[in-house]
Each structure stands twice: as structure tokens, then as C-alpha cells.
Amino acid sequence: MKTPIFTALKKHTEKNSVSFHMPGHKNSNYIKKELIDFDLTEIDGLDNLHGPIDIIEKSQKNAARVYNTFKTYYLINGSTVGILSSILGLTNKGDKILIARNCHKSVYNAIIMNELEPIYIYPELVTEYGISGGLNSKDIEKTLIDNPDIKLAVITSPSYEGVVLDVKGISKITKNHKIPLIVDEAHGSHLRFNEYFPSSALEDGADVVIHSLHKTMPSLTQTALLHINNEVLDFSRIKLYLSMLQTSSPSYILMASMDYCIGLLDKEGYTLYNKFVEELKDFRDKLNYNLKNMVLIDDTIVDRYSIKAIDKSKIVLNLRNTQHTGQDIEVYLREEHNIQMELSNRDNTIGITTFSNSKEDLNKLYNGLMEIDNRLKKNKKSADILNTVILEKQLNPYEVNGKKVASTEFIYSNGYISAEFIIPYPPGIPLIVPGELISKELIEIVLEYKKLGISMIGTADKDLETIKVIKGA
Image 1: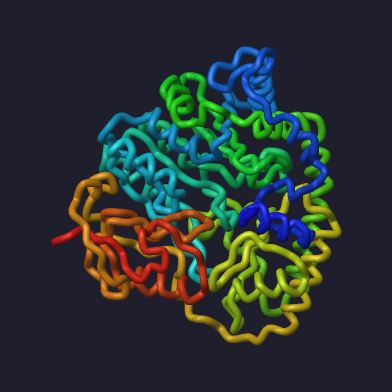
Image 2: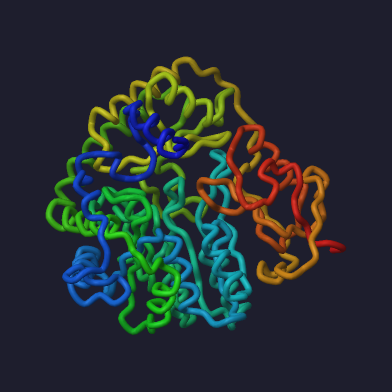
């Protein structure tokens, strides 16, 4: 019997590697092993996610209370369905919306689905580390003044690298312009549970907030929350789209996972985070003091580049001053120390820590990092930005549909209008969106990513030797 997925998963789990990647439960005891017995359906007494009146309604109300929000919905199709439903539910076909250009691909999918006109705000660039910074509030204000017909704003905070925006300041601006603010806080389910972390968008005035529980909490992959954080907001169409876009056969295993996670947070969340934060502080302090070549990205970037704060549960190690790449470090940790990081590129390697990581886990990571740091050779790299390039929009993404397209060699595609996405995955933030003009800078970035072996999706040609472009444009 051929079972490639099952076999690969079994082989991986037998390694017992230390996880500094998603999901947040880290295969710990916080996930109950009896969940497999809960693979049931909407029989008597088990309620219905699409019309909850009993146990699911009670559990969602529990989640709203724990997160101190007006209304919370369980998502079993991940944050993606929350983002899609929120944008579709708060816009009409053809509306203009303001979005941060470093938003997740699901935001762009919603734009295409509702034929929206995106007005982009680009994040500032942290040139010394090769990561995206925050959004300049003055740029947002000016954009809304110049485009008084914008109906909605969508931003991401924290970013994959843990960069937190001034959501409070941005929400004041959007409220002054009488438009809702959606915050993709997929990486921030944990923020409200300890003062060591930045404040959550729920506390800072966002109208709708989406959390990926599975990213930083003990909950199964695909579990997420959609919070309505404004009781005067008409969210009836958001609810409608949730019903349309989520499966009609929701998994009780996933719902039980969320229910158990919320119950745990309600009972022990602050206690668990207090213990974890003390261990995390010690871990970060030791790294900051002892690293000689790698750099742990820390508060030095706060209040610069429009960055309000950083989420220190993200371990972001920068390799700019060395001859090595973030991927070199990831491979070394995996092969020499049985440690798996979340994401790496040329300049950085990123690990996600949660309270499901033990003190022993952190010590293993510390020892592995110190061992390799002592081997590294200094050699300052160029300051080229490898994750962001400002591109010229020729068409709205939805306008590409129905256009005649042709394939052309990617390396010779400069000046063509792209008919496809190019999305490094993870994190799922498009380098180029359909309708944007391909530039030399973009080609250089993509070729560098290919050289590093970074996975990219969105193109018909999986090897990205060719790309589809608008014919005759």
C-alpha cells in the first residue's frame, strides 16, 4: 500500500525533533490524545457550527469572554477563511480598499473575489536586517485623504518577524475617516496574556481581528478565531460569508481542540505565560550577551521604521555580518541538533516559541546557536532588500482574469505585466500580484530565492523558469 503522506509524517515524528515552528502545541501534552475519538458529526447534543445554539455557542461565548471581545467565531478553515469573510462581508463589489502591501495572499484572493481596487501602503524597510518594518501613519492619513472613497483598511500585525504596528494610532485614523479596520493578527493570539508582549489589536481599537490559534497556542492546525471588536459594526454579512466559505462538514476534532485551548487559557493562561516569559527572558538575555556573530533582533528597531514594538516570542536571528545564510543555520540546527526552525532566508532564521516549549527546549536551542555562532566567519553582506520591492500596478488583480496571457522566460520578463502571483511560502506574502509590472529588481530577488532553495508558489511553472504575462501588454 502506497501512503506517501502518512509515511513521511511517521518518519518525521519518529525523529522527536525539537519544534520552534508551528503549530503552537509543539506536539505536547496540551493536546489531548483522545481527540481522535471525537471525529463525529452534527448528531443530537453536538450542535452545529453553522447555526450554533448549544455547546458550540457556549464555547464561542467563552472565547469572546477570554479575549474580551464583543463576538468570537470559531474558524476551522484557518485564518484564511476569517480574512476572506471579513473583507467580503465589509465591502461591495468594486469598492476601493487600503491594504498593507505585505498582507497575506488571502487578502489578495478576497480582492479578486469581490473585484476590489486595492490602494497599497508599503511598509518601511529595516535595511540593516533585511526585513519589513511598520506602516507610516502619515502615509495612511494622506492615502485616506487622497482617496475619500476607500471603504476598508486591512493591515497585518505582528508580522512573521514579530514586527508590531502602531495599531492604536492607525485605528484612530480609520475611525476619523469612518471606515472599519481589519487586523490580521494571526501571529498574535498570545499577546494579551502577558505584559512582556505588545498590546493586542483587540485592545488597540481594531474593529475585526483574526487570530490563528494554531500558530502560537496549543491548538490543532487550521484552528483560528474571528473576533468582532466593535458592537456597532454590522457584521451580518461576515457571518453569511463564514457560512458560505467554511466546510459544511466542520471537524469536531478541530472544534474540540479550540474549546480545550480556550478552557486552558481561561483557567491557567496567565500562569502558564508568566512561567514561560521568565524562561524566554533568560534565553534572550543569554543570547544577546553571548552571541558574537549572529544578531538577535531586539528592541533596537523599536520606535524606528514605524515599528511600535516587537513580539519577543519570535526568535529572529540575523546573519548579515557573516558569510552564512539563515538557511545554513536552519540546516545545521536540524541536522546537528535535531531542532527545526520555522522559516529562513538569506539574512535571517526565525523560530516560534510558545509556552508549549519547555525550558529544556530553549536550552537546546541556545546551545546549538552558541556552537554554530563560534564557528561563523564575519563578512558583511550587501544591504539589498530580499523580501520587498515596490512595483507599479498596471491593472487591478481581478482585471487580469479573462485577459489573454502568454508564457515567457522569467529571466527575460522585465517590463511585462504579470498574470500570476509569486509567493514565497512561508510566509505567504506575495512578491508580485497579478496586474503588477515585473521589474529587474523583482527578477533579481526571485533568482536569489531560487538559489537559496526557498519555496515559491502561485505560478503554473513550479520551477519558475517561465511566468504567465498579459499578452500584448
